[in-house]
Image (tube, rainbow, N blue to C red):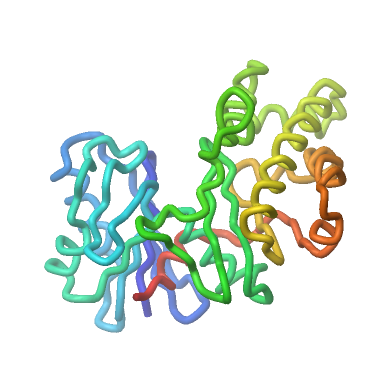
Length: 273
């Protein structure tokens, strides 16, 4: 068995994974205090799941990581974590191998190993929420890059800002709403909401075009809070992709939301050297 952790600025999620099954899950709030307080909460969470059968611990964090040394730098929404030697801290505490990676990479790995991406050797996982995260599976393996941030297309320049600005929650703020509210309005048939979703889909189509130019994958799987509204922005996205200069690439590309629960947590549990 393995333990996987998905760390966010609001909650820490941990799961005990046996083969492909999530046996137990625990969630605790992320402390807002010092690095020591955050570390203590994390270690206490792991202790609640630790058994003699646990062979390794994997951790997904929202930032770049020195994967070899297990150092976390400037974790998003965890301000106390500026430079944390997390691998050393956890291995000293639990005497098991600890693997640390970016949370979007863990999402992509989770979808590939446990979810809809099982049948694809080359795929991209996009997480759409507060920001845009992405992870790459190339040749059936997670591709990390030097600092676990390979494939972060959301940060590429786009229009006046970057793709993240136009393909995540800040897009909805420009309209004075949220993705959740806009989805509820669209379900009621509100035309203004449907029109806004089509604009969002056009933006996302531009992002998928960038993915195609950079990686030409077999599949793109979308996760995060905005994935549930896929039916509302799908047409706008496909209309934009209809203008892609290589239509054969689009025709052979599988794009879908991932419905795998706890994908990033499961992916963290599957991390290895």
